[in-house]
Image (cartoon, rainbow, N blue to C red; front, side, top):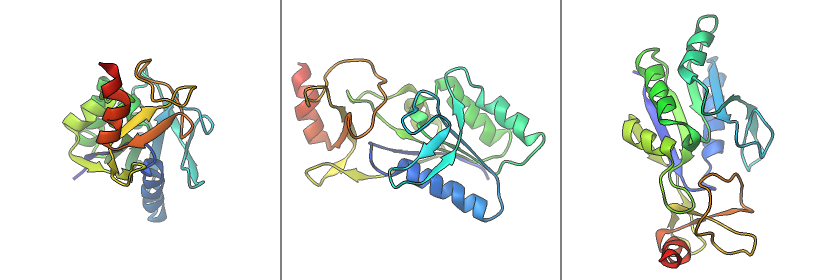
Length: 195
């Protein structure tokens, strides 16, 4: 029975590495996977999912106008698809997450979505909120804060090296712009400075 999985974490927990390993496992067994990543995130080159460990794979791109269900239905009309994997799934729209449920429920194809749960202010991304509500299985991938505790939050670092306390929800960046923090340190650096 196919399911919709949401693998979530803060940054630097190995989401892309896990996605690439899952795709590899399917392919090693002679199965076909379709990998997607957000068009907005072109840090490593457009149409690639890349891990900080140096591994990568080609990917189809999605933006807010992509109908993922229609694309997968079109692909399986002439080829096979044994699993759909989505990187940067926090950038999905609510409608696209519904499309993922249709891929699972109508087409019978498992979907593995990987993304960040909350933004730099501790607010849920719309794609993540829908996945948290509708996924069949939620899996938290863990990383640690500089203090050694589990990091469940992400802070954005401004040009002066301080935690940002306002700004646009989406700003693409890696370790040079974001840091994974435990709740205690996130509160000290972000929420306590907002009041």
